[in-house]
Length: 331
Image 1 (cartoon, rainbow, N blue to C red):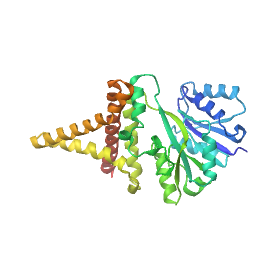
Image 2 (cartoon, rainbow, N blue to C red):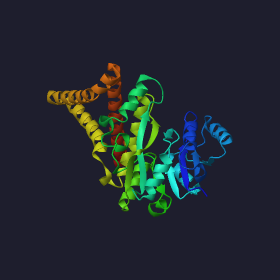
Image 3 (spheres, rainbow, N blue to C red):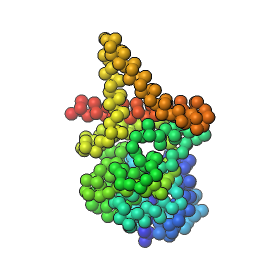
Image 4 (cartoon, helix red, strand yellow):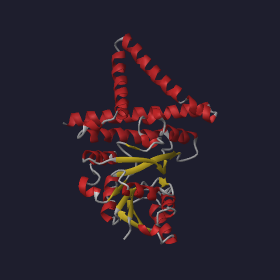
């Protein structure tokens, strides 16, 4: 029986699934003590064929594909958990590539009781070679973009509020429950809230690293962060105390822009205040990203990172506010 079950939600990941499977085959942890369970939402591309080909080429790695008819991430994870037989469960994404010692370090920290959920740091990489994709990958780990989300940049091991992916003892899910299938995003964070509320710890070890491919363009980034904001409010409705300052600032900023814009239609004072706020915000973002232009010897790089950070803030804040308004109207 395998010691570690690696669970992977998957949908249309033909471009990256082989990279992930190869990285698991290359782990320093014994391959015979691992199983890989891919929960696929009926992919429409060649993901299934890529998995089957890898299985045929590398039969030493146990790979099992389970169906996810609901085609969302929490249901995919729960389907994989039900199929898993390992003492440890490690969650990964189909567009991630863990470092060679990823599984070994996760298991070691769990066995050492560092945390009830153990995770590491994302090495965020562009999903293609375009300038904007590179700028987005930089913005996704920039302090102006992500605040104190330490799993995107830290070099210090610490207890935190959340980690990406996550590694757990299997019996944790018997104590706190599985992933909440009513949340289509933020399911990781919500699970970590329940872990912390039960007295557990979330441990981040920066030696545990995985490559994560960011969105390729601004529309895709805006869609991603709109969903983050939308589902964050739906999660917070049941536990508002879990809101962090990095999560509160974008909706507060967007709300202030809306109110100032409305009142600016009737008063020059509010037009002045609106102009001051926008100018101050843009100045802070541009000054904060000057180093990126200097580092890459290209002014366009800093401007691209600024555009990505602004997109993240506005989309997240707008999604959060839209979700809040909808819930209030519905109530």
